[in-house]
Image (cartoon, rainbow, N blue to C red; front, side, top):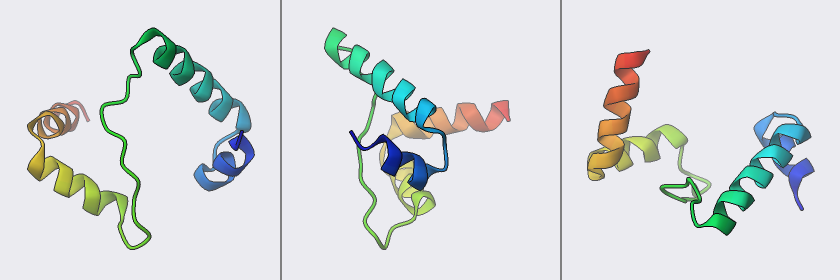
Length: 72
């Protein structure tokens, strides 16, 4: 697996990466991935730019962001 590479890129411990792999693999096997959207960023894209675009295009993401903004 590529846990060591992922932990370097994200700046989190290998234990956290392994836990997420375990949880998501278990969910995938039971038919519930917990992942709404999988999207890779192009080298020229920023996370914020893509999130803004998704917010503008997807009502579910727009609603989620509105709810989270009110909680913060």
